[in-house]
Structure formats: structure tokens, C-alpha cells
Image 1: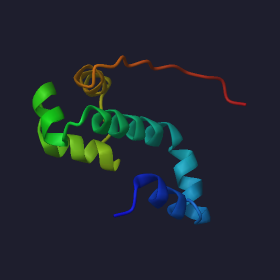
Image 2 (image 1 turned 135 degrees about the vertical axis):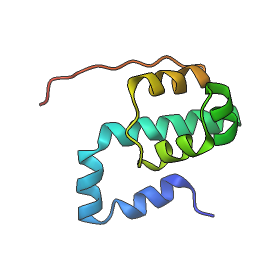
Image 3 (image 1 turned 120 degrees about the horizontal axis):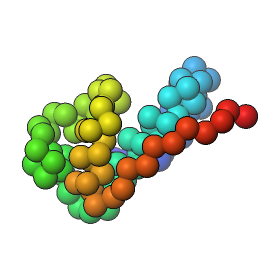
Length: 93
């Protein structure tokens, strides 16, 4: 089974995929961080869902990028992963 980073690198070789990834960079970075922290803690999507009072399918949709989460949901995710949620606006270059 290929690791996430290897799959990501392969997909980003495609110009259109890379362009869309860059357009959605912040979302993908957040999703990647949640997955990384969840895996580091050794918990499943189901474990995290139970911890924050939601369904496993909600975690799955978030991690697949098919769910536009509320700030409240993101805060619950952060709490469930023993992390802080920081949101900021940065001036474009």
C-alpha cells in the first residue's frame, strides 16, 4: 500500500491536479494535519467521531475533502485531537 505522501506526489505531477490543489491549499493542509495527528495518536475515524460526538462518516467526509466544515466542527476536531485551532487571515503576496 502506498503512503499518502507518495500518492500525493504522483497526483501533483498532473498540472490540473496541482492547480486545483494550490487553489484549495489551506483546506488540504488542514485535512492533512488532522489525518496526521489522528494517526499519530493511533485513533481511528470512529474513535475520533465518538470522542467529539459525531458519526464516523462525518470524519470520513471531512478527511476526503467532500465536507465543508463549520468552525464549530473544526473546534471539536481540534479538541478531540488535543490541539488548538487557530484561524488567521494573511495578506496575499
